[in-house]
Structures are given as structure tokens and as C-alpha cells.
Length: 496
Image 1: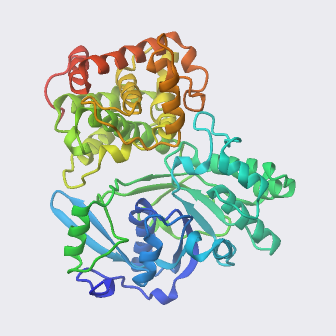
Image 2: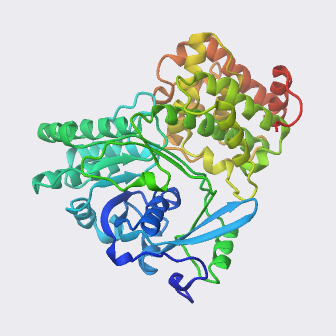
């Protein structure tokens, strides 16, 4: 770099960074974490003198983020984008950065065993838990889990690394850290706890199973902030905001941030509530509302929008039919399945539509479409089950699911190849290629028990509705299907 980010022409951290202590550790130093959890910690240090610093840990550092942080004194920038322009800040809350590939496993485990460490936060994506999305159980035949079961001292998966760090703390007589999942899964704390205990049992360590059960707190949380991938264009914009300084660790995001956390931290926690975090006894109503109304709508727009030729979510919102349908999906098919919506559904839906329309975000439909096999069970399939039990309609949910099935076929409406990024991509491809002439693509993909379980494929009404929409997508294309469904639902004009 020609200059240092510490001399960039944007607000710098206004607190003594040398006073920060590595009391927080984050596993999975991705863009979302840097724009969300780390920003809350940074604000707490800047406004209230908190000494809760972050140790950032990557198990691969394939993006080079850890290396970039080390090269620029552990500083990076966050640029918020709204309709009025860009607003940039330098975040200084990181006090240590480690990569397993460069610093070694021992360094990572020693960081997990640091006496001052109280909380480990996670953004490892749904697939990082090595669980079955349909059941929430550890995937016992997962290749990495098979390795970790046989070699607990050479962990590869994130759960195994956490377990190895906890085991080291137990051996040294240190208290357990709390594990705070920040990934988009219902009951993410319960899933984390279950995966850790089941893996310890696979490693034939009954004492560790008991110790995790008795001492490791795994509160659930809900996170919300739209953080698109950094493109060449946004990278150039960040450089301009920083006065010509390159920041390979910089991120862009919308200004909106929300974090709801179950308040259970035996070794203490930051005073998050002082910077707007909601501490609650039960996060599940917030989780369900966000997973279904926001994330489910994002997936709906991602698959249909990609097939329709739209590169970004804001582009989808310029399509009158898609805008109408996503509004219908939020209120008529998702909100109605919520047991306890923590805020008025109409207000929440209106705020989501406004955020989706933000043209500056450039949130790619392809990015949101990634890892659909891990996301759809909680975003679309769980609410579909509720509609099936009630006998109510689920047209948009079915159309979104049919669009996913079309998308993972790997060929778009113009006959061009789709780069399908999914942990089950090989299995999906095999099922589609090996199906006989009498088996439809829908029937082939419904064999994915880890996604659909066994109940949905056996439900004749569900299969019929899903097949109908898949056939329509094949026959008419995504844009025409959306317009036809709007007409059947009685809509006209763009939703305000």
C-alpha cells in the first residue's frame, strides 16, 4: 500500500487500542462478521470504553483477510451504503488475527485456551456445522466429521476445533467459554450445543460430553445486516473513501444492523445493550420472523431473479410482478406461520421492501443463491409444512422452491451454465443425471432426505403443487411465471 489505513481520511478508532483484551474470539472472519459483530464491539469501545477486543480466527483464510489485517495493524474499514451515499469508518477492535493455514493449529488452540477469553462468536455458514438441516443432527457420515471422530487432536471442522479448544481449557482448569452462533439457523445455539456433544460422543469422550453439557453455554442469537460481496467497483469506492488507500479487508454493508441475543454468559459479556443489541430470554420469535420474512424472501428473489436475468436484489424489486409476489410472500405466506411475531408484520415487511430496493447495495442474486440445500429447510420448507397442516395455500413458497430446483439443474433459461455453489452439488448433479425417463427432476431432487426429510416427498398435494410450478418455469420462464401468479392472486401494479 502506498499509504497506511491508519492515516486514511476517514474517522479513526478513538479509543486506546493497547487496552483491548482478547476476551472475544470470532471463528470465521468473513465480511458479515466484520460489518456486524465487530462493529458493535468497536462502537462499545469508542462510546463506552469497553476493553472487549476480538481475536479473529480463520480456518482457511482463502480470501486473505487475516493476512491483510496483519499487514495493516489489524485495522480495516466498513463502508455503509444508502440512498444518500457512502459513509466510511475504520474499525480497530481486532487485537489479534490468526489463520490455521499460516499460524498453525496450535496457535489457534492456544487462542481458544487464553485465560481471558469468555465468548466465541461464530459465522461459519450453515454448512460449517456439519449437520443435517432437515433434522438439526450431526451428519455422522460427513467426511470431515469422520476424520474428526478418529483424530480429535487434529481437528478440521469448526465444531471439532471448538471442542479441541474446550478440551484444552478443561485440562488446564480454565472455565469454558460461551459459544454464540450468529448464523442463520433456527435455534442456532441448540444446534451448536447438540453438534458439540454428538461429536464428543463420536470421539468416545464421555467425560467431555458431560463437561460440555454442564459448563458450555450456547445461547442463540439473531443477526441482521445485508452485506454484499465486495466487487471491483465497491473496492474502488472504498479506496476513494480512504484517500487512495487500498483495504483488502474492507467491507460494504447497509446502515441497518440488528442483533438479538439470549442473555446467558457465565463468564461475563460486553455491555452490548449500550449500543443497541437486544438481550432477551428467548430469541426464537425474532429468529423465525427474520428467517422466514427476510431470508425466505431473499431466497425467493435470488432464484427467480437469477433465472429472470436479474443480477441484484434491487433489480428484482424493479420487476412489478416480483415486487408484488415478495410482498405477498412476506405477509400472506410467511408472517401467518409465526407463532409470536415480535413486531407488527406489516411494519417489518415495509422496512424489508425498502432495504431490498436500496440500489447502492448491489447484493447479487447469485451470492444469496449459494448453499440453498442448507438454507431452504428453515426458510421455505418449515412454513410449507405449516400450510400443509392447515390446508392453506403456499403458492409463492412453492414457486421459490421450484425455482431452486430449476437453478440447481445448472442451466439457465437461455441455455447457459449456472455456477452452482452448494455442499450437495455433486449429489444433486448425480440425482438429476441418473434419473430415468419416467422420473421428473422434482421427483429426483425430493430424494434429498437431508433437505426434504421423508414427510414432504410423501405428501401428494405438496408434490403436485411443486411439480406444477416447476413445469411452468420450464414452459414459460421465471418472468412469465411471476406475472401469471400475480394475476391469479389478483394483484396489479407495483407494491408501495
